[in-house]
Image (cartoon, rainbow, N blue to C red; front, top):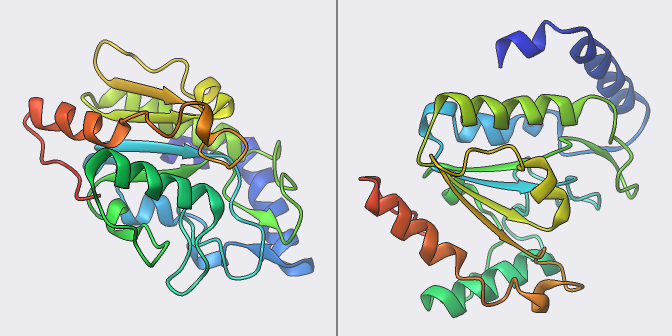
Length: 208
């Protein structure tokens, strides 16, 4: 990723984000903006899940897509993810929405946009974050193989359309939001399929 940090767009992006955090309430906390990369470094990635924006309500966003801090009410999309886990693998419904234990095992939980203004979804889109996160996915596609990409919803599917399907497993489904989860996300079987693929290629499965 280092070459990205030296490009003009990244300088503009960091200036914008710094100004936003100084003048408005933004999420996630500044120290957690790059948490997806911090917890799941490049050489440990086994699964990639792409989100769009961080959660924009108080205390929700923790730097990992779909994830919230311990003690925070589980958002509807994550609740549907848990329902599919329960259906697919027979796992009990978790009481916490914190997905850090996934990230620590090699699940890159990456939002396309890494910051947002409070209560204003999409407010930090088209400022440069998408270019940075596209570069991250492109780097994985070029230098790694046997990664499982879970692309839920049309936005994630567009963002991952260039992934080499001969060297990786690309799984697509509708978004787990309440608006679309029952149009094919529930029943997709992605979690068992991902683990079967990882084991087939000599990698340890994820403890979902």
